[in-house]
Image 1 (tube, rainbow, N blue to C red):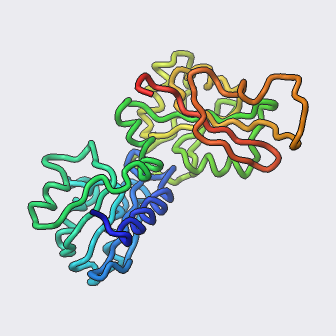
Image 2 (image 1 turned 180 degrees about the horizontal axis):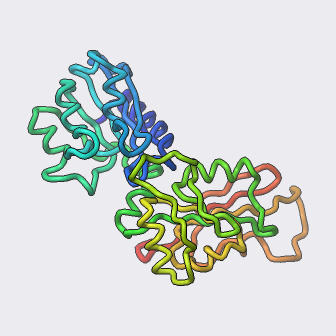
Image 3 (image 1 turned 30 degrees about the vertical axis):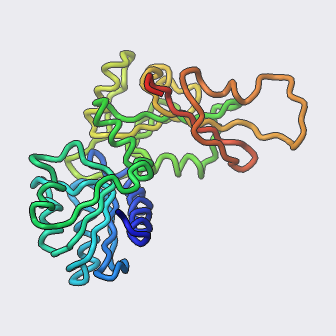
Length: 294
């Protein structure tokens, strides 16, 4: 079982893993915290982009010799293969950690998997630690793997095509690999943020066939795509593939007689509210597509 210190460390790892959103694809956004023998945090790190060091290596580098005999707390099972970087499970073994906690198992893990190799090296393993919380960051990446296409978010306002403020749009863009602007232009959410030779911005128009459009987006290396604006043609083209909608609706006074359609009409059919919060003088609704098992 995870100790209170380890749970705190996992939530810290989840928090810093989000700093890789919008730049790690096609790799996952992962965070790691290293605790010393006494359970004191001595290093942390996250994965920024493909080709750079992974979260575990960054955290171990920060911890140095203090990692020996300690615990690695990581949001995703350490990788078990040589890619552009060496396998993270070997870095943990070489650092002589005694225990590794992981939140989510990696469906792309090669061979027996990083967790099994760590166990074979005599390292204690805890799986599924705060898994549901870690999925707040890793969920879209896993969704992309399972569907074979990017996770798509559509953001708009109900009373104007602008809807979201510039600051709000900037924050949304930075959490996505690709952004489809209102005029159909496709851009990186974080300009120049992805690794070389592992990601490209689609240059041709998406066309008018949903299947081909999804293929173009998938081939770019994107795991997440943001569509901006209610009247964006891409929203119509990819309507059946939209997984999440983020909608700004007008706020109101504490007591107000409503004669027109209510805010509930802002959420498209087939979606269920997952979050509601104020955003300036407006209210932001987030809704997820309802699946058959919900």
